[in-house]
Length: 380
Image (cartoon, rainbow, N blue to C red):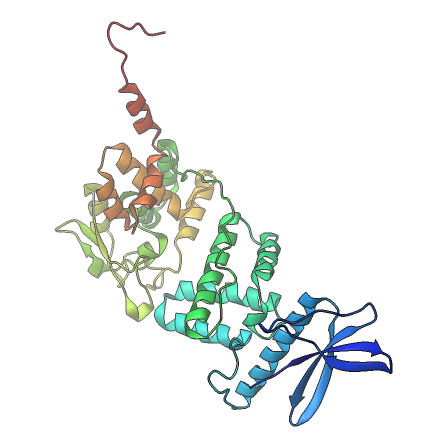
C-alpha cells in the first residue's frame, strides 16, 4: 500500500513542529491551518521517511497528495512490485506515453491505415501538450478544455477541432475500459458549433470546360468521377476485375494486398451509364489498375489530375469530391429515390445522403410550385 500522510507545519508554544492533519469520524480532513502554517506530504520510500511542501490551500494540498500517490504507485509498477487488491481505494496510475503507444498498436491492427495515421497525429499533439504530466490520471476536464482552446488556434476549422476531440474522447474511453482510468475527462465536453455548408457542385458550363481541356486518359478519369460518384481512393483502387462491361457494373471492393478497404467497410456495386461503359471499353488494359500511372502503377491520388485539368480550364475550387457531390445532387434532382442514392454513394446513414437534398434548387422550386391557392381565393 502506498500511504501519503498530510502534516501541518505550524508554530506552537515550543516553536515550529509537524503534526498530523486531523480527520473527522467520516475520514474527511479538517483544515485548521493558522496564518503562519503550511501543509506537507509525508511518505516512506525505500525505508526512509520523506517530506515535501504541499501548499497552503486545501485544494492544492489534496491534488499534491493525489499526484504523489500516483507517482509512488507508478514506480511500484515499473519496478515490478504488486499492489495488493483492496489495499488502497486510489485509482490505478495510467502512464501517458506508454498508454498512447498501446492504443496506437491496437488501432494499427483493427483500423484502416488512414484512421491509424490520423489518431497517431492527434495523440502526438495531445502527448506533447501534456509533456509535463506522467500519468493520464493527472489530466482533468479543465485541462481538456484548455487543450481544446489551444488546439482551436492551431487547426483550420471547428470541424477539424471537433474531430480531434472526438478521437481523444474515444482514446480516453478505451483507457477507462482497458487500463483502469477512473473516468473520462473528455466525456461531457460538447462539440463546437459548426456552420453547416451545402456541398459544392459543378454546373454544366464547368463540366464542359473541364472535359474540353482533358486528354483521353484524363477525360476517362473525370467521366468515371462524374458518372459513378466514387470517392478518390475508390477510383485509385479501381481494378479491371471490378469492371463488368457486360452487366455495366462497377464494384468497390477491398484489396488487402495493397491495404485498401472501402470507407464504410462495405463493398458495393455501382451501375454504369452507357457513356461511362463505352469510355472504359476503349481504355487499354496495360495494368491491373483501370487508371494507372505511366509506369503502370496505382495512382496514390487523382486530385492532381483534376487540379491540372482545372488549371487549364480556369475553373477554381475543383477537386475529386466535388464530382461526387455533383453526381449525388443530380441523381436527387432527377427524382431518384433517396434510398437508391444512398446505396450508390455507399453512405452508412441516410442522414449523410440527405445533405445533398438541400443543394437541389430545382427540386425546391418544384416543391413550392406545387402549392396552389383554392380557385375561389385570388392570388396577391
